[in-house]
Amino acid sequence: MIYNSKEVLTDLTRLTSAHLNYAKELLEKPEDQLQYKPSLKSWSVLECLEHLNRYAIFYNAEVSKKMEASTLPFSTTFKSSYLGNKFANDMLPKEGMKTMNTFKSKNPNACQLDKEEVLLNFIQLQETLLDLLQKAQFKNLDAIKTKTTLPIVKFKLGDTFRFVIHHNERHIVQAKKVLENN
Image (cartoon, rainbow, N blue to C red):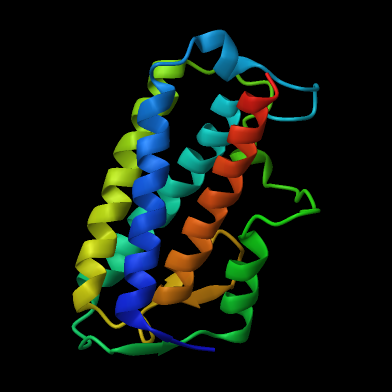
């Protein structure tokens, strides 16, 4: 699939800004609402965001490092790889969405989480992501390759941004459902 680089970055910036604003709204909610779990195996709002924080630490650092090291010129388009496009699209929330297993290190289930710490970390990590998206407007989304949390799998920068932000969207939707049903 071939994408217009500027359009992709604009869409991803819009989504990330919405995620950031949602987290700021959550600062006003009582902690017990954010700690509420519909069942023992499901995640609370704070667990959803902590899960995203754990991934953001890895991906923000990896994307920043690869973009700083690259002198490749900006390209107006990028061609998503088959695997990158599949992973990014599979992360988008949809009706009848299947749950996925996560790495133990990224699973916050049953952790003691502090509302302020989780939310402020999330806000800071999303602000960093917005900064990276801004810098990406001068980078080659097609030629820069980044590591993923999956061993030996690398994505093009454009696919990495899409995967990470679609993953964020998936868990923001999950958090909203938990809060609505609370």
